[in-house]
Image 1 (cartoon, rainbow, N blue to C red):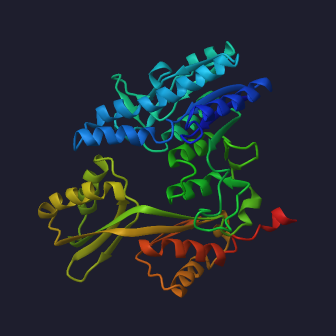
Image 2: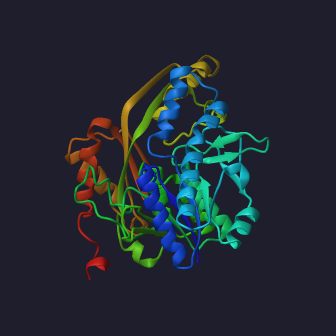
Length: 410
């Protein structure tokens, strides 16, 4: 069996933990499995490198910043390979350019375009354990790129897809995907099995267990993903294709995201092409717009509100202020003190009244809703940030997520 594993920063946070990971990998080899391992930088290392850059200059070059922060994974991959070799298990560390893992040129948020498998397959055939530096890639011009926060998850799933691996195991400091953040909801339960679609929604809504692009890869290429703890051998959560049992569960999980900011544009000319002129430059800047609401007015103008990641708030505000005179926007307002709370579940497709129940629960707790977004299996509400934890706990209880589903208790 070919297994791709990913170990996060806390899993390789110090030398003793690296030895622990090496012992776990050795167990897989003893069982006869081929293993490709993707590692993150040691815990805190990426932040340390970023601090060095921003302490030095106010706005580091994105290209040089990627060159700097990519070194964190080079350290952890080399150390883990050393540990395995010392134990008698042939291992080789590989950086993105040595494979290569090709990406576009969007430094800091690069997207994987292609992974060459020739060298990976040749090394596996020699009996090597391959330790791949996660989070990084290389452009056609040979420049180092990084995939953004959580990018090692994406590296792992993409390699699993390219190699046709039997499973991709994401080892982290939590033991699976929970119905809500256990730090906020003590009664949150670990989910044994969740669909790609549900996990994709949870990841996009703020659940931090898996990076969203890794789930996209898993869904497209049907890679079974096992989220589990690197500190125990207990099974975690399987992320797989949807089956009938999943549709019986009305709501699978509650997610929240405090990394949200809202921008409101008032008096926008209500005519064709205006939305494109506003959101085109935002997209070109690599900024992801989430929720958008437009309301028409009797005077032939419209009011428009949208959300962006809080980290992109200032850059977005600057862009729209530059566009305002050209387009004829009357007024611009922004708000960083918001959060998005979402409920996700495959069972929503066949059960009416879920949205109404969510809105009533929030109203009963005095929580005002600023924006609403829905899909087949997700409902999201933008609320004041100060009510985030209250909203998550209230919704978790209201939808019965503190109780095990019937199929698990029978």
